Length: 238
Image (cartoon, rainbow, N blue to C red; front, side):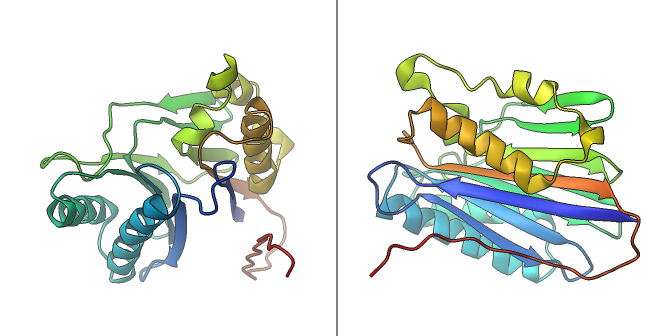
């Protein structure tokens, strides 16, 4: 059997009360699940309102069984019409389709994403634009076969641009390129490492909202079919 793990970590821009990144999850009607990650233009409450709008529309259509590409196009059309092409948001949809034994990544995001397996790391960086600005915007869709020891790493631009203020670079390709998938590291461990490195490069004061999703397919010996989800959310004391 395979165990599918998804690790998520996100942090807001330093000294900004609300993160402009929003993440939502939905179980698909025909098996599998989808994660929707949106990064609203700007930062703070306005960006949060925008990214919430985008993810809510996407989740509602995915729940009804719509395909990822159709969802991305429809959400773009809605945002473009609603805000008259004046605001933008990046949109990533990471889906596991159990009936097709595949992982789909739908990307309206200039940031690349990475796939790591036993053959090494592959960068997917085809040109892609955010939703909301141009009338004919379409997602870039990538299909990856579901197999043991494969990791998919998706993130927002706060990760990619970490350290620029201090003339540093996160160099994710070098970090992930040396990754040994046979070690069987959990998705959450990889997620925390990527976010931790980004925050460190910004000297523990993130210059932008940062979000990372890592999906891992790892072999498991047990036949236990229990599904689990854990959420950790820090809250200020009263």
